[in-house]
Length: 201
Image (cartoon, rainbow, N blue to C red; front, top):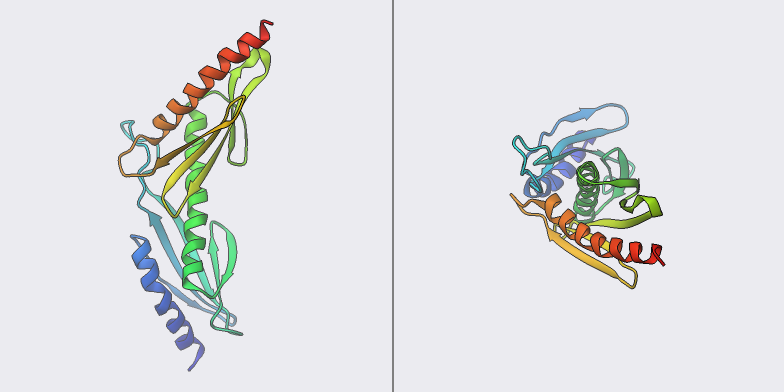
Protein backbone atom coordinates (compact mmCIF):
# COMPACT_ATOMS: atom_id res chain seq x y z
CA UNK A 1 0.00 0.00 0.00
CA UNK A 2 1.55 3.30 -1.09
CA UNK A 3 1.45 6.61 0.79
CA UNK A 4 -1.56 7.97 -1.08
CA UNK A 5 -3.57 4.84 -0.38
CA UNK A 6 -2.61 4.97 3.30
CA UNK A 7 -3.67 8.60 3.52
CA UNK A 8 -6.96 7.95 1.75
CA UNK A 9 -7.70 5.09 4.12
CA UNK A 10 -7.05 7.29 7.16
CA UNK A 11 -9.07 10.17 5.75
CA UNK A 12 -11.95 7.91 4.78
CA UNK A 13 -12.18 6.71 8.38
CA UNK A 14 -12.37 10.25 9.73
CA UNK A 15 -14.47 11.84 6.99
CA UNK A 16 -17.85 10.38 8.10
CA UNK A 17 -17.27 11.76 11.58
CA UNK A 18 -16.75 15.26 10.22
CA UNK A 19 -19.74 15.02 7.90
CA UNK A 20 -21.85 13.91 10.85
CA UNK A 21 -20.67 16.69 13.18
CA UNK A 22 -20.40 19.60 10.76
CA UNK A 23 -22.76 20.73 8.06
CA UNK A 24 -20.27 21.62 5.34
CA UNK A 25 -17.04 20.01 4.24
CA UNK A 26 -14.55 20.58 1.46
CA UNK A 27 -11.85 17.94 1.11
CA UNK A 28 -8.69 18.59 -0.88
CA UNK A 29 -5.77 16.18 -0.86
CA UNK A 30 -2.33 17.71 -1.30
CA UNK A 31 0.78 15.61 -1.78
CA UNK A 32 4.41 16.60 -1.32
CA UNK A 33 7.55 14.86 -0.08
CA UNK A 34 6.48 14.75 3.56
CA UNK A 35 2.75 14.72 3.90
CA UNK A 36 -0.69 14.34 2.44
CA UNK A 37 -3.13 16.91 3.68
CA UNK A 38 -6.89 16.83 4.20
CA UNK A 39 -8.49 20.26 4.49
CA UNK A 40 -12.01 21.11 5.47
CA UNK A 41 -14.15 24.00 6.63
CA UNK A 42 -16.50 23.00 9.40
CA UNK A 43 -19.26 25.04 10.91
CA UNK A 44 -21.29 24.99 14.09
CA UNK A 45 -25.02 25.38 13.72
CA UNK A 46 -25.44 27.85 16.61
CA UNK A 47 -27.45 31.04 16.24
CA UNK A 48 -27.05 32.69 19.63
CA UNK A 49 -28.34 36.23 19.37
CA UNK A 50 -29.59 37.81 16.19
CA UNK A 51 -32.20 40.20 17.51
CA UNK A 52 -30.88 43.07 15.42
CA UNK A 53 -31.94 43.60 11.85
CA UNK A 54 -29.66 42.82 10.13
CA UNK A 55 -28.06 40.60 12.78
CA UNK A 56 -24.76 41.87 14.15
CA UNK A 57 -23.72 38.53 15.57
CA UNK A 58 -22.69 35.75 13.16
CA UNK A 59 -25.24 32.96 13.00
CA UNK A 60 -22.63 30.33 12.12
CA UNK A 61 -19.15 29.83 13.52
CA UNK A 62 -16.72 28.46 10.96
CA UNK A 63 -13.22 27.12 11.40
CA UNK A 64 -10.70 25.72 8.95
CA UNK A 65 -9.48 22.33 10.03
CA UNK A 66 -6.35 20.77 8.54
CA UNK A 67 -5.28 17.16 9.10
CA UNK A 68 -1.95 15.62 8.24
CA UNK A 69 -1.04 11.95 8.12
CA UNK A 70 2.21 11.13 9.91
CA UNK A 71 3.79 8.47 7.71
CA UNK A 72 6.21 7.27 10.38
CA UNK A 73 3.07 5.95 12.10
CA UNK A 74 -0.10 6.35 9.99
CA UNK A 75 -2.30 5.79 13.05
CA UNK A 76 -1.39 9.30 14.19
CA UNK A 77 -2.72 12.49 12.69
CA UNK A 78 -1.81 16.12 13.18
CA UNK A 79 -4.90 18.31 13.46
CA UNK A 80 -4.78 22.09 13.17
CA UNK A 81 -7.75 24.09 14.47
CA UNK A 82 -7.73 27.88 14.86
CA UNK A 83 -3.98 27.87 14.15
CA UNK A 84 -3.05 25.37 16.90
CA UNK A 85 -1.69 21.89 16.23
CA UNK A 86 -2.84 18.77 18.06
CA UNK A 87 -1.64 15.17 17.76
CA UNK A 88 -4.23 12.45 18.00
CA UNK A 89 -4.85 8.83 17.12
CA UNK A 90 -8.43 8.55 18.37
CA UNK A 91 -11.55 9.70 16.55
CA UNK A 92 -13.30 10.65 19.77
CA UNK A 93 -10.38 12.83 20.84
CA UNK A 94 -10.29 14.40 17.37
CA UNK A 95 -13.96 15.33 17.65
CA UNK A 96 -13.39 16.71 21.14
CA UNK A 97 -10.41 18.79 19.97
CA UNK A 98 -12.40 20.44 17.19
CA UNK A 99 -15.47 21.04 19.35
CA UNK A 100 -13.45 22.62 22.16
CA UNK A 101 -11.32 24.71 19.82
CA UNK A 102 -14.31 26.04 17.90
CA UNK A 103 -16.18 26.59 21.14
CA UNK A 104 -13.34 28.82 22.33
CA UNK A 105 -13.58 30.84 19.12
CA UNK A 106 -17.36 31.07 19.53
CA UNK A 107 -16.93 32.24 23.13
CA UNK A 108 -14.43 34.90 22.07
CA UNK A 109 -16.93 36.37 19.59
CA UNK A 110 -19.69 36.22 22.18
CA UNK A 111 -17.52 38.18 24.64
CA UNK A 112 -16.81 40.76 21.92
CA UNK A 113 -20.56 41.29 21.53
CA UNK A 114 -21.17 41.49 25.29
CA UNK A 115 -18.29 43.92 25.72
CA UNK A 116 -19.66 46.13 22.94
CA UNK A 117 -23.08 46.36 24.64
CA UNK A 118 -22.01 47.13 28.18
CA UNK A 119 -19.55 49.12 30.31
CA UNK A 120 -16.48 46.94 30.68
CA UNK A 121 -13.23 48.22 32.21
CA UNK A 122 -11.03 45.41 30.90
CA UNK A 123 -10.97 41.86 29.66
CA UNK A 124 -8.61 39.16 30.88
CA UNK A 125 -8.98 35.85 29.11
CA UNK A 126 -12.62 34.82 29.47
CA UNK A 127 -13.28 37.26 32.33
CA UNK A 128 -14.92 40.65 31.81
CA UNK A 129 -14.69 43.36 34.47
CA UNK A 130 -17.98 45.24 34.44
CA UNK A 131 -18.08 48.76 35.86
CA UNK A 132 -20.11 49.06 39.08
CA UNK A 133 -19.10 52.41 40.56
CA UNK A 134 -16.28 54.13 38.63
CA UNK A 135 -15.84 56.77 41.34
CA UNK A 136 -15.13 54.05 43.89
CA UNK A 137 -13.11 51.85 41.52
CA UNK A 138 -15.68 49.07 41.96
CA UNK A 139 -15.82 46.43 39.26
CA UNK A 140 -17.60 43.11 38.85
CA UNK A 141 -15.45 40.30 37.38
CA UNK A 142 -17.64 37.85 35.46
CA UNK A 143 -16.11 34.64 34.12
CA UNK A 144 -17.53 32.95 31.04
CA UNK A 145 -17.20 29.30 30.12
CA UNK A 146 -18.54 27.19 27.30
CA UNK A 147 -19.67 23.60 27.80
CA UNK A 148 -19.27 22.19 24.29
CA UNK A 149 -20.74 18.83 25.25
CA UNK A 150 -24.05 20.38 26.36
CA UNK A 151 -23.83 23.45 24.08
CA UNK A 152 -24.37 25.91 26.90
CA UNK A 153 -22.76 29.12 28.11
CA UNK A 154 -21.89 29.29 31.82
CA UNK A 155 -21.37 32.59 33.62
CA UNK A 156 -19.90 32.83 37.11
CA UNK A 157 -20.86 36.07 38.85
CA UNK A 158 -19.32 36.73 42.28
CA UNK A 159 -21.20 38.48 45.06
CA UNK A 160 -19.91 39.75 48.40
CA UNK A 161 -20.63 36.44 50.12
CA UNK A 162 -20.65 33.77 47.40
CA UNK A 163 -21.01 33.42 43.65
CA UNK A 164 -23.93 32.88 41.32
CA UNK A 165 -23.73 30.50 38.39
CA UNK A 166 -26.00 30.99 35.39
CA UNK A 167 -26.36 28.51 32.53
CA UNK A 168 -27.72 29.35 29.10
CA UNK A 169 -28.43 26.69 26.47
CA UNK A 170 -27.33 27.80 23.04
CA UNK A 171 -30.29 27.29 20.74
CA UNK A 172 -31.36 28.63 17.41
CA UNK A 173 -33.12 31.95 17.71
CA UNK A 174 -32.38 32.63 21.39
CA UNK A 175 -31.39 36.16 22.39
CA UNK A 176 -28.38 34.98 24.30
CA UNK A 177 -26.51 38.25 24.89
CA UNK A 178 -29.65 39.99 26.14
CA UNK A 179 -30.38 37.18 28.61
CA UNK A 180 -26.79 37.11 29.88
CA UNK A 181 -26.61 40.87 30.39
CA UNK A 182 -29.99 40.94 32.14
CA UNK A 183 -28.76 38.50 34.81
CA UNK A 184 -25.39 40.21 35.18
CA UNK A 185 -26.97 43.65 35.54
CA UNK A 186 -29.41 42.28 38.12
CA UNK A 187 -26.51 41.12 40.31
CA UNK A 188 -24.54 44.27 39.55
CA UNK A 189 -27.42 46.48 40.72
CA UNK A 190 -27.56 44.69 44.07
CA UNK A 191 -23.80 44.96 44.52
CA UNK A 192 -23.74 48.59 43.43
CA UNK A 193 -26.22 49.52 46.15
CA UNK A 194 -24.12 47.69 48.75
CA UNK A 195 -20.94 49.36 47.52
CA UNK A 196 -22.55 52.81 47.73
CA UNK A 197 -23.73 52.07 51.27
CA UNK A 198 -20.22 51.04 52.28
CA UNK A 199 -18.77 54.15 50.65
CA UNK A 200 -21.05 56.38 52.72
CA UNK A 201 -19.86 54.88 56.01
